Length: 86
Image 1 (cartoon, rainbow, N blue to C red):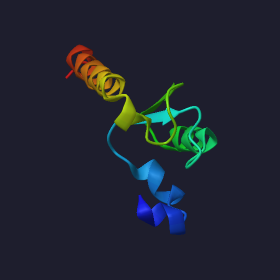
Image 2: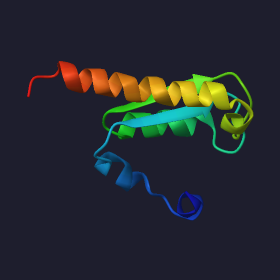
Image 3: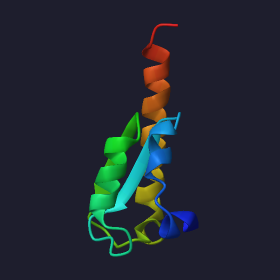
Image 4: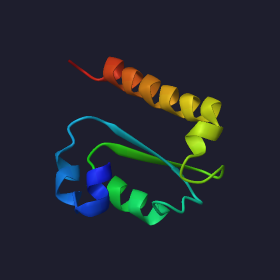
């Protein structure tokens, strides 16, 4: 993540092979929501979820919600995998 502050790494985003969850606060002052929307548009099989709570570090202050969103994403991936033909 630190590298992304100094270099444009957008060219790497389309190469992410795994499903990707982007969790963002609508009020993030460190990395604006527009950045998350751009990433979601570039990363294949990505999902962007925004929350009203907090700012950039909202996951630290709302760990139950943060964890719940991650677990829901993982459960949905597992369901999709079970329902897809081999």
